[in-house]
Amino acid sequence: MLLPVNSKCECGHQNAVGTVLCEACGKPLEEQLMKSNEPLEMRYDGVARRSQKANPDFLDKIWNFFSSVKIAIYLIIITFLGAMLGTIFPQASTFISATFNPKVYYSEQYGLAGEIYYFLGLHNTYSSWWFITLLVMIGTSLVICSIDRVLPLYRALNKQQIRKHHAFLKRQKATYSGQVTDEPVQWTKQYGEALKKKGYKVHIDESGTALLAEKNRFSRWGPYINHIGLILFLLAVLARSIPDWNVDTYVSITDGDTVPIVGTNYYVKSDGFSMELYDNDELPIELKDSGRVKTFKTDVVLYECAANCGDDFLQPELKEVKEHTILVNDPLRYKELKLHQFDFNLTPRINAVSPMIINKETGESYGPFHLTMVDPELYYEVGPYSMELIDKYMDFSINSEGEPITLSSSPNAPAFIFNIKGPNLAEDGEMFMYFPLEKDKVRFSQDTINRELANKLEIKVDGMENVDFSAATTYLNVRIDKAVKFLWIGAFFSMLGLIMGTYWQHRRIWLRIDDNQLTLGAHTNKNWFGLRADAAYALKRCGIELDPKSLDNGGHKG
Image (cartoon, rainbow, N blue to C red; front, side, top):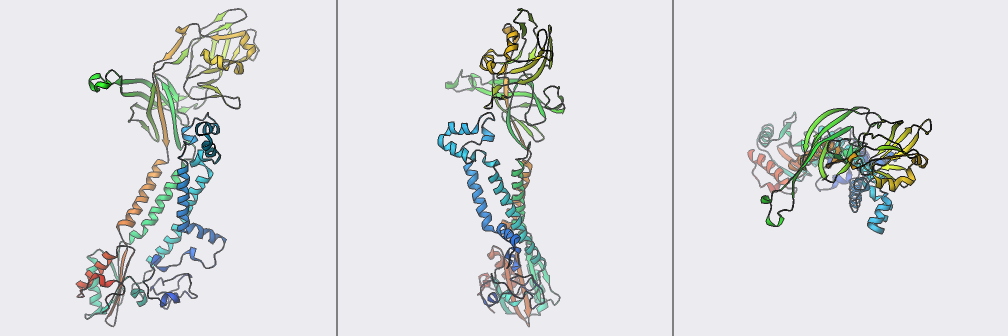
């Protein structure tokens, strides 16, 4: 773009360097633009923008990069492509158990394609540095694009001069020139009254012979309100990476148990699971006696931890906050937390055991003592022995580094580590790992049990009558999304901006009368047919009847 050497207009207004049309009278300031007969480019009313600097420095170049609409489109396309790649295979953070090695999982499940997918880091696409960087760049582009354009536009619309230059009026897409036979002041007022009936806000200068009629200026801010909505939307997406802002996990709970909801400050108790089957008369013939499930539900109580939260050795202080019957499509909702009925399991699970301590050297046995799986006591006195619970694992396993871990909060393979003190034991006690299930003892004993103590003592259950099995297990889907309300707010502003910019148009009509010679120009960002009709309607009310199409630039000249 060629920039004028002197940005001061003949009307006396001093424009910023880079201004194409005078902010006051609208006269073209570029020599080449002044000589042309083409309709004027009215974007931002010709006001200078920072991104149009003639000699940009380093910061200006960065500003220019992000203020480019073309760059913003490229960034959006690249982000969409990256998001699409992230859907080829399941994302590790959402669909793969934390105990699995993602590298091994993708290789075993998807072969070479899975290995490449993992190598490129696409298994964690939406939390990867490059995806987040793209979102930040899009947000930066939206902010800079908006500032680069909205400030000049605001300045232009607030500095509008009523009496515009002849060159400005004649170079609009809708124009009219002709003689006015009536008194110019009276004619201008009459024309303004006609436009007011069309909803225009009319301004007449002090001489009474120049007019500016404007309608729906607010629609010009629609794209920028849309940008605000998109920025809020992007910030909400990024906020999901904040710890505890986005939780999507599962918890299993047996009837009567109270279990913590991992990643939150809440506990949930099951007051009972129930299931209803369809009666035979409710089923078609081919499905009779099939035992089809009609509905299943769980009565739960939600607690909020008030003290001793997350401490395995202190009883948490719980405060009841809500009771609810969870159905498949009727989750428990409390603040940002939602608990969905996901699945159930009627297979019995171990709930508690009453084992004995056996001294292998003397053959004496002591006990039994009652040990619950989910919420065990911390201290036990069994005969001459005292036992302190050091650690527990509900679903015991050993990771690739040889360290003990728990695969879930369900007692699928429970294990307990005790420090036992008593006869013929060290003064400070000795560690013993107890597996209630014999199959787990066989699987893990060689690596995990203190062999010397295992030769002296044994902890075992004497008969199935000392084992308590639970009747049902309910699986609940735990969802927390603190960012979702901001997503909705962003979506609201974005839609509001789209509606403002789509269904309304900023219409402006200028005119001036010099020696009974009328010059009229009109501009809108879209819907020229409506603008022409408005201008022709007002002319007709003032005694000038013509075809609205004749207002097109190059049309009727009176």
